[in-house]
Length: 358
Ligand SMILES: [Fe+2]
Ligand SMILES: [Fe+2]
Image (cartoon, rainbow, N blue to C red; front, side, top):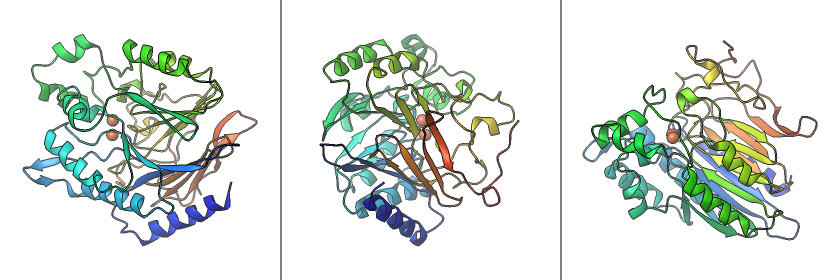
């Protein structure tokens, strides 16, 4: 860990302390140092869920979460090379919501790479997003790292196009967390074929960072914390020495390691979701390698929102999480276990609420 890293952590803490505590913020800074390459950082902002009330009136708390993340990113020193936006810009996929969110994001002082979320997609199946914001999947190279953006929230065409009487009905169903009528998300075959071809040209030693909206592994199907063809995507990534998957959607601190692939969730600027095991009606289903979270209180709107900083300089992921209203956590690779683990676990006396198991 470099001195630069410590200094930045310090700055983040100052920023959080000076901030109005009523605002949620999730922003991730990533440092990647390579032996012969150039270290650089990028920031990650995800899941603001901009929600239109009526006309020009939007839910203020969600606006402010995103505005705060943009302000913090603009104040980063040194400036990140770029920002990744992790999806769910809108709540119900409306043009007004996407336009309003883009107006806020337009204040960012560095380029932005966009990932689409299901809340952005299911009203018009990504048409406005593609027209005004970004391609739905693509890759780019930056200072020796290969970045891939996937659209991981697809469903079967038959299900998507024929099941609902209207686009609004489809969007309304897909916007639910515990959607009994839902369909699992998928990357689907065409995109997997594209990914295979995209990766084929690379040396297997090239570090790869994949950004998706849903996690590219299976956590809990009942809430669509799930990508149905995750194993097939993972199989394309496993031959590489070092792969990091960053995703949004779950609105919580979450991580896993499968083979050479490290998975890390980015927090939401809008609200936290509880961990599935804290939901009494749901059958617990947590990946074997993921330790239980020591949150979340679904009635505490800002538990699990805050800063996180991922350091990839050593080649192993170290994720320092500064939660605004909870004690800090550090998640790093446990060499003995061979996967990430909470190396600095939260103080049980201070965390809210204590972890509950059902
Ligand atoms: Fe979301
Ligand atoms: Fe989502």
